[in-house]
Length: 173
Image 1 (cartoon, helix red, strand yellow):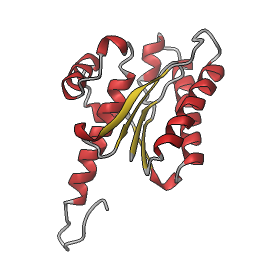
Image 2 (tube, one colour):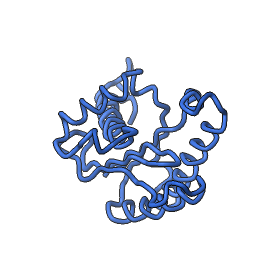
Image 3 (cartoon, one colour):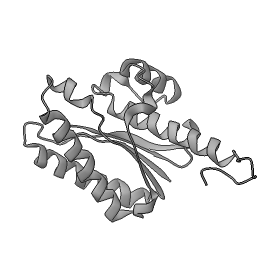
């Protein structure tokens, strides 16, 4: 099982794959705190409880987590606090994942996997691949990004596992 996470302090997108391809999707959604007006720590703590339930239910053997990039603060009016809060959320939720799964099974990746494709385009593509996904119900495109991240990671893993170097050694696995 693969668990893909797109964490933040307000909503965390997640996707659980049996196999990292569209037909292997088990569940996806967004962890949303009940009271969004709370402090970041309160919101993240609430989402951590839900994330723990997902991990316990699906027992992922591999986890991929999108980590903050330097562009996060631009979405918060250029204030550095946005990056710090987002980084805290990613770190805190990643620590929880480390405690509940094998820490060696976790891969962290920045958002370069999106290749700077606009979020709306990524969401539209996910809606075509996953009939249950509704972009209108995913205002920050967190679920779309978790779905896309899981697919990206699965494709990358398959390519690396089928690629050998000049000495015949398998790369990436």
